[in-house]
Length: 173
Image 1: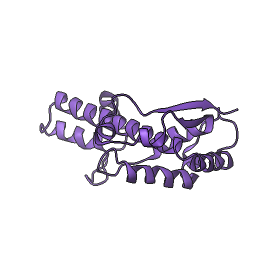
Image 2: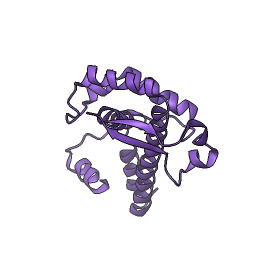
Image 3: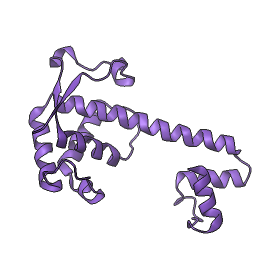
């Protein structure tokens, strides 16, 4: 990723922003390597940290959203109905960016899940999470594996669930 972006900037294929405020993360870091603030190795480590950290946060957030949906089947049904209305009934069709932005009820559900059990204290984009959860609810019914009182989240489970979140997926017919 780093080499491709660097080559695109050097060849003029990609437009280089001059304002640090509008630069994306990778372009900002590449500008620091040009001015010898960061070495190539420093840059690679920073990119790895952001990529893997973001993935872990999204995964944890999706897991807890599934847990909440499993324990609130009425909410899950409303999410499913919104998905059918906005995206159609074919679960094999990809959800477009435009469709994901129309999933207002799902957006509120995901935000409420984060309010209840925040995977990290900072805000971050939920588009990836929205598409993942939309795909799950569109194709599967999410069901709890334990009674609600047996599976109440505790700090250890929220910070790093080692045994996973106790839900099962049943294929929608």
